[in-house]
Image (cartoon, rainbow, N blue to C red; front, side, top):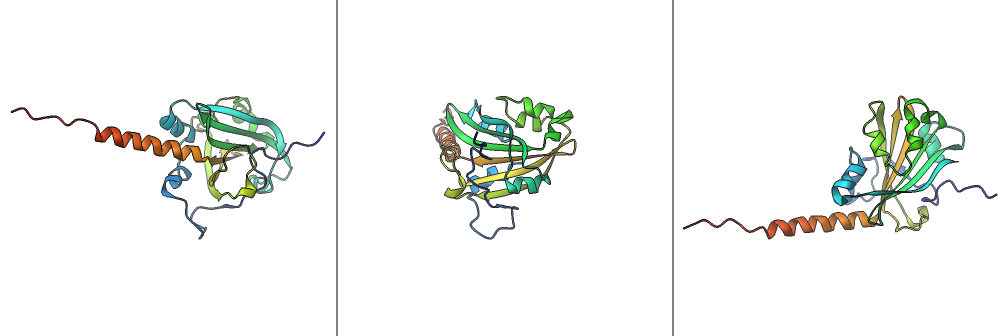
Length: 202
């Protein structure tokens, strides 16, 4: 049997960099606000779109990318992998890849492996034992992406710990997310313009 590819989203390991230490093109402001988000992306998506569905592409034992093993300080190639798409009414908005050593999924982290179609953010932002340890960004090119989805231009990767054990979450912002955000902003602006002003009685 042919071994499962390391990722259903990525064709290869993109170049990750620490924000502020890259001199090439900066992300547009609209993208920057998502890259720099410190709260739950799921909650922000729900605030923008309303209902958000989690489509699980894979979850279970899988192979790590080289940079993931380095970031996790974990030498074995096999670990736990979860890849999902967050969508609104069937339209994909965000793709995500989570990797963790088996030890992370024990004790306080046991709920991660039982998420199913629930978003990871529901756990990360409610568990007092979770800590955010660092963030990296990437600008993807065509050779990096292989999922049957429109290629995202930008993504980010955050290292968390659950009771001191590492969990690495990569999130990729699909073009439809920014289309929805722009359409929503335009609708709000139009509604404000069309609000009738109170007339002063004679």
